[in-house]
Image 1 (cartoon, rainbow, N blue to C red):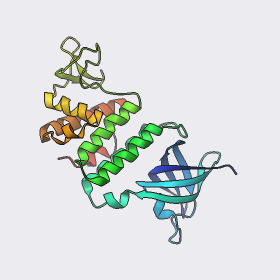
Image 2 (cartoon, one colour):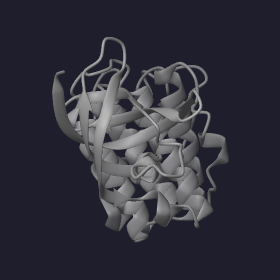
Image 3 (cartoon, rainbow, N blue to C red):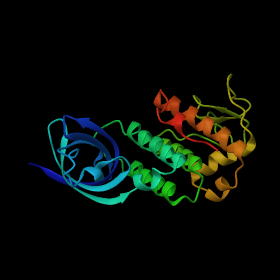
Length: 243
């Protein structure tokens, strides 16, 4: 039996049979892994509570033909227990877990940057230093950038002319200059473009100082851009509480 060990974040857990679960994890070195955890739904299981969504765990797996199996689990951090009592942070976290799964479509394909970004995003939610909506939107645009779909919030996405610009089009890749503006483009406020750039860069001084209007407009553009790239929206995103 081939064994391997890795650390990861539990993205999803599904019931299997009477006592087992199929758990989906985003791991540091092996990318997205789906594995069977036998007997974890029994009340006597010592590891069942460790394999809940938001669990940051160290896991030993054995390689299987279609699904791997879980043999040992150690908790690194339980983010879920600290998020479940805050609706805004919990729903933002759920959207982050779903995004991480959608942006790692190939199983066992290493994606260290996506893993580190997810762990950092969950830590930021738990710390409570920033608005959860800002943390989520920052995570979304940065995870899209890691996946190769970085939006442009300053230079024109088509010709590269430096901004600021006044048009934004999701299918074009972001900001558009006057010459390249497409029909149906949005016209965000200048403050919204500034906020979007700060979220992509992780500039929390600028992001935290933004007003409610800019945050709402930025959230709508981020959601539209994410839906375009994924070809459908996140199921969890409509439940996220916004300011």
